[in-house]
Length: 444
Image (cartoon, rainbow, N blue to C red; front, side):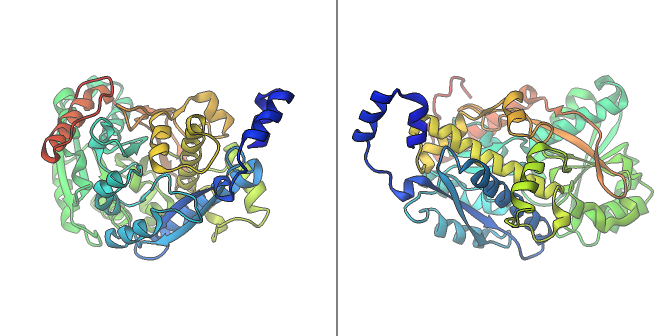
């Protein structure tokens, strides 16, 4: 805190300020961050590198910057197994903070946990932050003040896939008459893109074919036999866990080229393609955070954390993987939201109500992203009261049999087209729950 004052005050004013300021409490100089991890269970192969990436980035900030303006970051993990009931238990254990430091936000890292906590976190005034999943309608911050589906909600993901297909075909007008199958995990999150794909099909004239895949997806022969009969031009694959490699292998076995399969964010990791073996070569998927180690922030983490023996990383081969980089990206969002919050509330440990302001004013432009060493890893973001997504872009990567290669620039969703769907859903929710929408400068 004194170091910050020295940068902004003259010597006389500084002396008066230091005399007037109360001594800093230890808790004020530590910011607690809860981490509801899933390192065991059916999705552990994804959760382990993801949380290693988050922790390594938080460690990197502590080691290279002394924390956020002198406020060091602390954290604890609570094992959820990705399960809703365990996630709720972890939230209740973590929501009151640690050692005098409040809890500023909660990243559930699980669709079922996010759904189970949506109302509870709002009552507790703690931002619930979901990246690439969660409640799409929560993009409307006027109705969902503490829910943030930042970066790429489900509607944006589907729109980005359609826009990428249009690029491959030589223009949006070439989509007319094409057949696009959405093969989705048969769950509430899996069904989230049905409405957006219907709207996009109406605009562009492609045939929208929806095919559910029963969970957990260990056997999909009947599903892909049926998809083959449709003779699709492209398949938008919305899997999770074991479902994705089984889908890829089965699709290829039925004669569908891997190049015509495009996975969503949760079908875009090494863990999704390596088990599929040779069948996965050529497979594509969208991602908000590409794999790779050439990003300056990754090089900084390697030097200050991994090589220094301070890493949480258990498998060094996971460094730079899709899920490890996802963890780094989410760590960046955590830190930058807190940094923004400090601008309004001061250099101290922050609570959820304060951090909500930080998220609603989070702005990351290209120069700031470059300063973070994350150009190409992180998309520009502009989160507001009205717009809790703030991004809406993805990149497309392709598996060459050994590694992912990025094959597109940022593909931008048609958010203006999709927003009426979101507003209508948010308005229904407000009516059902008796919520008076906030004034965010634009009526629903």
